[in-house]
Length: 126
Image (cartoon, rainbow, N blue to C red; front, side, top):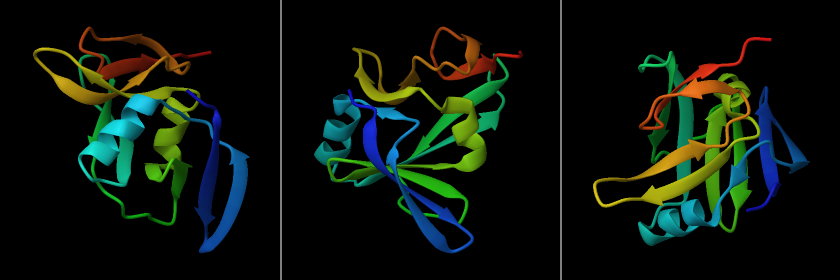
């Protein structure tokens, strides 16, 4: 795992490059995206799920004006700025089990609690 990554932040049509990402991209996520011949994964946070918010993953390389793009080893993790506030500091990984294989968010410092399946979470309130 690495905190380092090139982050391209598009704001109002201009592009700003930063050296540190607020997401950690695990090698398992990189390997899976390359294995299925995809170069981008979009992560969003939506209201819903059993704990209040839920993670949503899509194979979508379209970058919108309010998106933040984290690049690692030729793949891109794309998220909008609002969703990023809910997952900053988290790890993106690909997890395989006998009954399910999926991308997931782990070690989310913004989450207070989550459901047992790991898809939904509640946020910390300071």
